[in-house]
Amino acid sequence: MKYLRRASADGPEANDPLRREALGLLPPDIRTADAQAAVNTLLRRVEIIQDRKKKIKFIRMIAHLDAPWIPKVFVELLADSSEEVRDVAVRELSERGDWPASAVYDRLPRPPWYAKSAALRVLGLRKDAAAIPHIRRMVGDPNADVKRTAAWCLGEIGGADALSLLVRLAADANPYVRNAAAGSLDRLCDFKFI
Image (cartoon, rainbow, N blue to C red; front, side):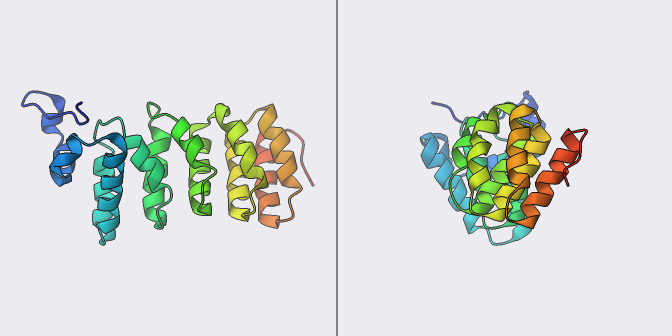
C-alpha cells in the first residue's frame, strides 16, 4: 500500500520544495507503516522538535503530503500544549474541504479542554451545519472556554438549531459565555438580547 506520493521528475511535486523537504524528514519506514503507526510516528517527531520555528515549519510541511492519514495527524495536533501548533492545525483542518470533518467530531468530546476549543474553532471556520449535534454536547461542558468557543462556533454556523443552543448559552452562569452567546445572537438575529 502506497501512503505517500513520490515526486517524479516531470510531476508537479518535483518543483515543490516543501513536499521534498517533508519527505526527507520522515523516517523511511513510515511509507510502509499502517495509518495509526504513521500518525504516532509523526506526532512523536513533532513532540521531539524543541525549536518553535522548526516545529511549525515541520507541521506545515506535513500538510503538503498526500497520505490518507495526514488529517488524523492534524486532528491530534489540536491537543498539542502549544497554542501556536494548535493554531496551525486549526488553520489546516478548516481550509481543507477534502479532509473529513468526522475526525474532528470524534476528537471534540475528548480532553483536554483546549483541544475541544480548537476542534470547535475548526467546525466554526468550516461553517459545518452537520456539526451542530456534536456541538450540542459541548454546550454543557464544565469548562467556560469550551462553552464560549461553542457559542462563537454556533454563531458562525447559524440556523434554527444553532439559535436554540445560543439562547441556552445566553443564560449560562459564566459572563464570558453569556457575552459570546449574546454576540453570536446579535450577528444572527434582528432582535437584541438584554
